[in-house]
Image (cartoon, rainbow, N blue to C red; front, side, top):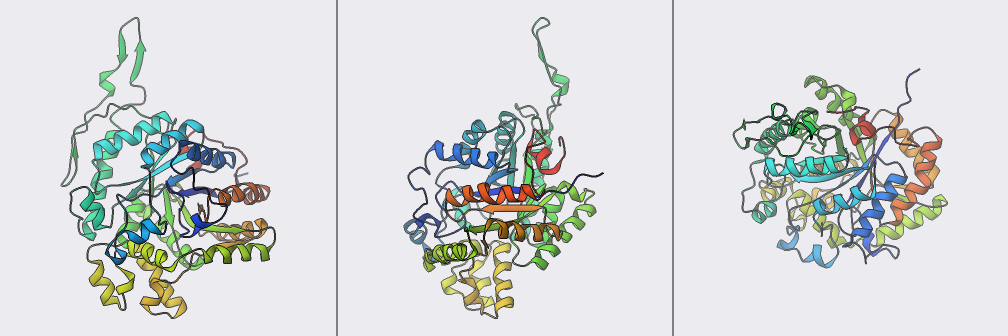
Length: 438
């Protein structure tokens, strides 16, 4: 008898008080005195691990969005989604506080060096005993380029660069054989040099001689995450990704995305089950449905319209206050913008009959609202429809919403046999995909 398919859960995180809900930091129960302290992130990790989450990952940007109004005033003053701490220093704290939770970070292939990035990720993977993940992004904002003294490549070139970057990283991660260490004190042999290899990778944009000084981890290399939604982004994900973060507005759109990615994986010679497609989901939970809806309305009231506009402007790469037509959007974007954000706005135009300007500032967070049982019903319906392999859980306010989800919805999913009660693997790749090592 085959094993029952179970959903995957990964938490969406920011190193600050606001993750995806723009007004969440204003909630009376939102913690604001600890987001710059190690204790917050250690406790967050323990909460997720106690609930048997597959992992968490941190979204990040190399800077602060300053597209709306031509400055960063709104983001700073109104509590925009800023990564106040570099996740690279936060994840080791979380690794030390846990033993099973996967630990992911967003890093750009456009503005990092392949050798340095691969060494840091492999070091985290070794120290965490095989629990590291890399959310691969190509960067889509001129401010990031300016902050590192570079130029933002053309859209159609970024994924070509990323392909080379990952080829180089994979080669570096494979520069040590699994059994390279000998550790024979009597013979004076610490490691076998025949099992450590030069890489000599040379591409158009990326090169690395190798080898890394960092050996293989128990899962071989970090798990690769991705969130591309353009045609080129989907093809990139189908080649490399083991977990995909998507944010589709309807169940048919999610199912179409799921089927498309799985088909592309086969075309790349990969097994479809070797990538978990995870739908972004935010929750408002109440003891009764009416209480949940009152809480959702209150949370919505905390979102300042200007802050929402600044967020959308950052994602689009264009100031939404200046957008009236498609031509306006294209002219303002230039070389910037995240295709997924643009696609969501076009979906809103189609679904609600709005103009582009109206859709761009439409305050729609798409929370799943209800009792724990109703939330579980909703997740079960999406999951069992074959439209995803699990969910990215994004908090409204912190830590209350995450704690509430872990203590009320997760046990309901476990009771229904939809989610694990215990970890069965030792590494993130084992728990997420059932694969022992890369």
